[in-house]
Image (cartoon, rainbow, N blue to C red; front, side, top):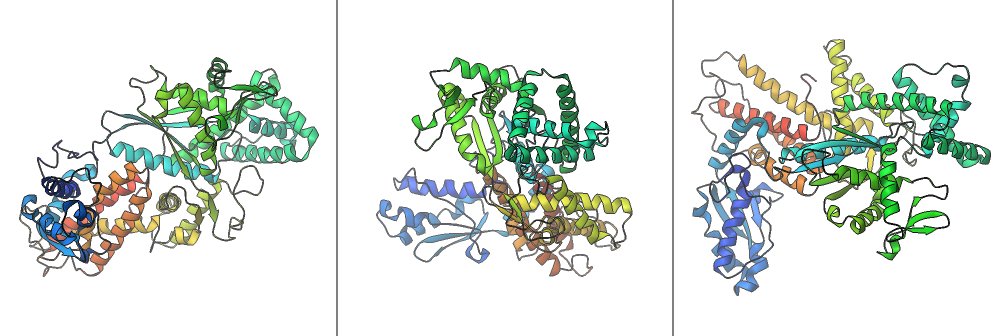
Length: 609
C-alpha cells in the first residue's frame, strides 16, 4: 500500500492523517516487533464486525508469539505500549481473549475526521497510488448488427466504476470500447435483411432506436436459420466473405447503413448510462495488424492444421486449449483481431504516454479464452503480459416471470430470439420507477428525470453490489425499493440528508448562524455514523487493489443505514439541541461521502425523490 497522504504528500510517519490511521497502527506495531527481532510479518489491522470490539483489531500477537518466545498476551501487552505514540488519536487499547488487540479511537479523531471530509470535499477518499500512470479500461463492447444485451449493461457498469476508481487513485484513464463490426454475426443480420419485406419494399425503419431493434431481430432470425437451414448457412457464409473483401456493392451499402444505425443507438444508451468513451476500436481495423502477427510467428508460435492456423495451447499449459486464428476459408478469427487490438493499444506513439496497464472486462464465460490469449501474448510479447488485466463478471437472470416475460431458468443470450435486451431492461427499470413516483407532486419533466436517474441506479447497484464473478438474480421490486439494499435507497438517503441541510439554511433561530462556526459543541458520545465515515478512503483503496467495486457498494449501504439510524434518533434542528451545529456538519460530511461514493459507482443523486 502507498503510505502517502493523498492530498499533501506526507507519509504517515511524518503527519498522522485520518485516512491513514490503519497504516499508522501497523507501522507502530512493526516497530515493536522489530525491537523483538521479528520482521517481515504479514499481518492485518482490520475493522471488527462489532464496534463494541473497537475501531481496529489485530491478531498479530497470536501470530508472532512463538517467534517472540512469549505468550500471546505478553506480546500483546508490549504492543499496547504504542498508545502514547499515536498523537492522542487512540483513546484506549484492550487485549481480548487469548491475545487479540482492540484499538478504540478517540473523540478527537472522529471530530477531525468530519473536519477532514468538509475540507477535502470531492477529493475526500482520493489517493495518489497511480499518479503518473496511464490505464486503459476496455468495457461494454456491443457489436454492431446485434442487440445491446444485458451482458453489455453489466460490463458497462463494472467498467465505468473501475475507471472511476482508477481515476480516484490518481491515474490518467482512457475509456475504450472494442466492437465487432465484421464477422459471422454481421453476415447473419445482412442475410435476414436481404430476405425481409422491409428491404424488398425499400421501406427500412428510419428512427434510430426502432431501426436498431429491427436489425437485432434480423440477426436473431439469421442466427436461427444458420443453425437449422443448410442452404441458408451456405448463403450466410458467402455473405461473410463478401463483407470481409468488400466485393459486393449491395452488401456494402446494407453494411454501412446497419453499422451506422446500431452504433448511433449504442451512443444513446451510453448517454443514459453516463459513459463517454475516449477511444473506439473496431475489429475491421484490427484484421491486418493481427494477420501480420500470425504470419510472422508461424510456425514458431502458431501451427498449420487442416488448412487452418492454430495456437496449440496445451503444448504450453495442459489447462489451456487450442484456438483457431485463421480458419480453413482463410479468414481471420476473433482471436487474430484480438491480437491486433492488444498490439495497437500498446503501440508507441498512439498516445502521448504509453499505457502502463490495459484492463478488459468480459463475461466469465470468456475467461478460458482470455487465458489462451494471455499465453499467446506472453510468448510473442513477454513484456506486455504484465501490463494486461482481465476482469470477468457473472451472468444476470430475472428473479421470476414478470412484465418482461422470461423465467429465471432461461439464460439471456443474443443468439436466441427469446431474449430481453439490455435496452429493454433499462427502459423497464425506468418505467417501474415512474409508476412509483407518478402520483407525487413533481412536474412531468421532473418525474421523467427522476425515473431515468433512479432506474439506472437500480440496475447499476444490482450489478455492482455483488462480487464480480457472481451471477445476479435481478428482481425489479427489490431493485427499485427506496427502503433497503438498493441503489434507489442510497439515493433516497442522500436526498434526505441534503434536504436537512437545505432546511437548516432557513431555520430561524439566533443559535443557528450557519454550520461552519469554528467553535462547536461536540457530543461526548461517538455515533456509528462517525465510525464509518472516516473508513471511506480505505474502502476506495481496497476496491482499487482487488478490482472490486462491490466493496464501495456494500460500504455505502452500511453508511446509509447508520445515517438513517442517527437521523431517526436525533432532533437536529431543535433550538434546545446544543450539538446541532456539529451534527449539521456531520450530515454535510455524510452527504459528501455519499456523493463521492455514488460517483465511483457511476450513480447520480437526483435533486428530488
